[in-house]
Picture 1 (tube, helix red, strand yellow):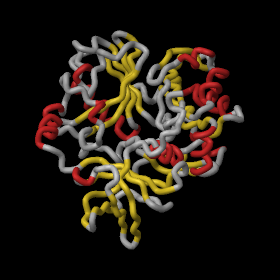
Picture 2 (picture 1 turned 120 degrees about the vertical axis):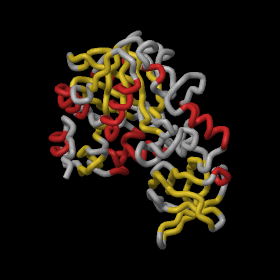
Picture 3 (picture 1 turned 90 degrees about the horizontal axis):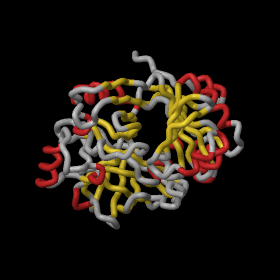
Length: 362
């Protein structure tokens, strides 16, 4: 039996009586006081998430000559220093090996942030595609906290400094946090104003405790995080996207630059020319019932696909979900039935995001 990994904050979670459960090979906090309460706090105040399980790789070298430019579906060379970009690492068939973010640290330096469950696979795949330069897995030495919510900016200005207030969306700064070298980026996964803090693993407990000493901040687990991200229509790797899914099927073509080379490009071009057999769809349920992974999606009595993610949305007061259906069904307004054994619920295809009232770009 595989042993679950733990983040440096495991003891802190236990002190807070968090409900812990496996996620991506890690023992992670699912909830503290409750998913709904934690969701509400993030939408109204500021929530602190332990994201130390994520992976970080450091590349040093010539981005073009050493091959990093051709690894992902987007251009790394064109990212200005101090900015980051989201996209994909694909296999030869165009399937999504991972979705990730690259931070341009310097002219010859970049940090790649990947999902926890794919750290080993991603590092091997990227290393094999590089022709030179240095490439290190710095995940164990790097901790990551996310502070999300409309009050996150004012909290961090008090803890770190006024420079936090000037960070635009998808930009970052290198600074000192509690005396340690750190990176603070303005990104997030909740639809709210938020920041990611990367710092040495041996300093993260101190920062966690410092932030939670502020009455505006409360901890939130992966349960609330899942509801928050689904309300704004973000895909979860391993559920909504994986190696059997292409960015085109997932409706994420805007994160693919076809004017550059990358592994999987030919497969995507062929799929775009031939047409797709399925497309990702967002749907809203006409009740408070929650659709679940693998529930059937029916249109006019015929199964046309399956649910990949679903929750009850506190902001909308109904069930919402993502799934894949035949292309002709992925039309806003199309009536669907979500079914599992004796459970049946009416739903309607809608445009994502479901919830548009967040403070993300405030």
